[in-house]
Amino acid sequence: MAAPHTPQALNGCGDEDRQSSSSEQLEAASDKVKDLENQRQPGVQSDSDTDDIGRQIEMEAGNSIKYRTCSWQKTAALLFSEYICLAIMSFPWSYSVLGLVPGLILTAVIAGIVLYTSLITWRFCLRHPHVRDVCDIGQHLFWDSKIAWYLTAVMFLLNNTFIQGLHCLVGAEWLNTISHHGTCTITFSFITAIVSFIFSLPRTFSTLSKVATFSALFTFISVMLAVIFTAIEDHPAKYTSAKGDPIVTAVPVAGTTFVSGVNAFLNISYTFIGQITLPSFIAEMKEPKDFWKSVTAVTIAEIIVFSLVGAIVYVYTGNQYMTAPAFGSISNEVYKKVSFSFMVPTLIFLGVLYASVSARFLFFRLFDGTRHKGNHTVVGWAAWAGILAVLWVLAFIIAEVIPFFSDLLSIMSALFDSFFGFIFWGVAYLRMRREDYGPGFYKNRGFRGWFGFILNIFLIIVGLFFLGPGTYAAVDSVVLNYQAGTVGSAFSCADNGL
Image (cartoon, rainbow, N blue to C red; front, side, top):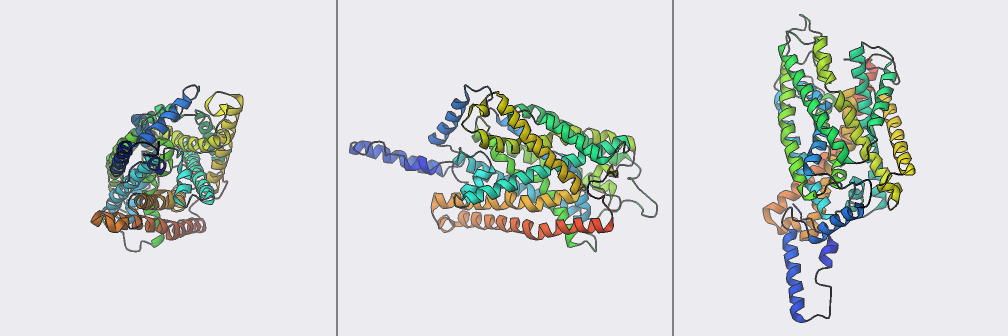
């Protein structure tokens, strides 16, 4: 991994007094050599970087709203709430399409890749402590181009708003499920958006981290209940003697199409890939160098929980009776409602988290350098609430235009995870290594150089696969579902309950 030194810090070493004695020059040169050695040590922060963070904290000292306040434990809580989410319940469906063995292998492989790219993200943010979000990184990676910044900003906001829309959709599913379609689905989706807007109003991640812990705990209870209920039932939902007992396959069944296979792969990938928020989280940590603890702990928990939940629910449900999310495969109505209801805090909070990330991005740009950013002012709070209101209106519209769970996950994964999960971080690795060791870094570092170079080129190619064939498969699946009449129409009052 590359070191977190800024080029400015290196260029400034030993230049304080060009008229100093030769002994002082030698000492300065020695300090510079030490800095260069530190640069090759993973996880070492330069004095310059530490000072930058210290200055940011000092500048906030007099503000009533302070942003750099998250410990690594609070950041881990935010990550747990982001990753331990409803999308876990799409894993059984993905395993039913891919087969149990390929599904489990892909789960472990994608988790490893995401951990690796998350650490690259962390290294990059340590090296550039002025980075506030993924848009700043996009500009820095692609020739300091303002066009790159704007394109990244558009994808960043669309990704987050699509995730908000997903939670409007699933909130409507839950309300329909517990009320037996008590009213129009559009109304339920709108209610979810209103409630989420209210919970989005806190302006710091430190405040949200308290809710995040609560959210992650309830999600864990929800999926564990779903696993237990699925296992103790005699038969899954919609069981018939004609279809027979659940069929479980180790490999994909004959006739599995490219479109369904890619969609299953994208569903698994979407659940793991969340690097888009990491720069925003790191930017509010008191000690960014501790971020690796947060992301490593969360990744280990992900592999265990995702694999167990996906495999156990799939084994007891089978190919014939699988739904996404898998709550719909529970035949006992009480069991289904109880397990699904424990997911409610996450249905609200995860959409809130992404809304907060987007609102913070826009708000900071509008009010950077003004008293409205760090203090309680009428203008500041009005702007913050207004930005959130617009984001949730857009999310509501997305939820009504694409009203089906698995395909919406696949579209988001193909369009946005291609860049924010793979391409960006492959390029970031190559750029950092080039800065440290020169254009031929992969030749100069022996096996390590070649291995890192090939691995990150592979990540970029995977990202391009997501963007090209992945997007084709996701959109084609939407078209096929509309043609088959298996999903409701846009802005429909039809019941979407499980």
